[in-house]
Image (cartoon, rainbow, N blue to C red):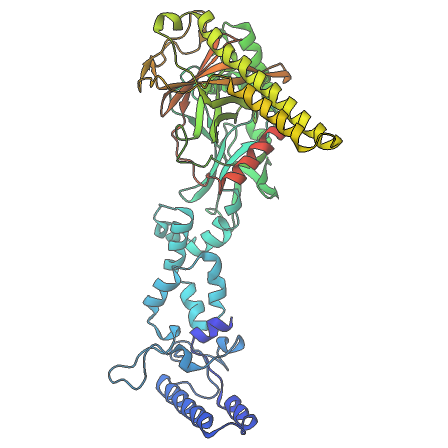
Length: 559
């Protein structure tokens, strides 16, 4: 606060300087001359500015009447000469001696550059600063620059809600819930983006398009909103159901986690009871009626999901998630994709890159493989060149190529495990010293060097023909017929309730910047993935370490 006081032009009083001069009489005449000169300069400044007595906030008395010393004098003092903008001996119009001497419009421009959290401290400097800080222009700019508000806030101010109240009572208190979140809905998960939308903070739940139209845009539905329209304090409303907004509540459980609660769950009920609620949900979720879904197993999965998800009544806990960081070496831009998962419909996955691997993590899941699990793990160090179209149609030929790589990966893993075991055993026994360990490591290197290197030695064209093998099921009959690259990878499969999970080999196919696919050899199934193009605010990870820690936490939530 002393720094603010010096900016305001507050200096030591004449009495303080006289006391210091009496205590320093043993100093030379040069120092006394400097002290007298300083006193003369301060006297001139006070005479010009019009401040009497023991000093104060320069120039404030002419604008704001005060009783006693200025507010700034309570927080510190400093030499007036240390804040002079120009030499007072120069001719012409008087120059400002402190920040407070500047015109109000210039002060508004300067203070509007500060973050909103710093403005309350600025208001403590003096009365003039307190008046300037209350200017709506400053807070209007803070709302726009810090939270991206694009609406004309002057219209809201006419309605009785100031930009300052909007910042202090709505935007700043709820800033911690802005961003990307995953709801805790058992195996199903979800994707929530909390954003400043107009004069509201709204939590949008993103839903995949109706199966199997994977390239259609995402759908979204508001789950809650916060506003200040009806009172001078923030109001939380639940948006779930079909009877309009009603009372809700938001609680911050801990860092990177919050909960929502509906206080009027009767607004979620429909006159026709559970049957009408199910028909309405089915139309929204799948875009069809139950009679139009002929697959009995799919009917069971749909009914199971409705019963499980509807019991929450929008009383949910959310955990923060991030979009993956972009690295120059990435095969394509990481991000969110919609993918087909057979009878389970469309699900959302997050594609990220980790050195020589690409990983797809589920944000929405199903009773077999829940949300948060690693659905695809692609080894980018093992590219594969596809045969001609006639051989691609043969599932046996594709299986032979992929399984050959899979067996080699398993052999290398076993050799690496033996090497680690031998190294540990040798270190424990200490019998043969470093020579035995060196011989074991050399033998392992010789074994690994015998493996063929899977690389683009044949320099395949940028776009090579692609066709699905006969007998491989695809939810999308229309899929890209050319691809850029293919890699060996594994996919996660499991029984109902995530029982007996295992990784099964498959082929990762990169079509273009926005689409890729995966052939599940054991299931004889093909999944097509298409990029989610929605702009998600406040969603990027601060760094790669935070992102990888988030991925580990996601898997633990549903393991």
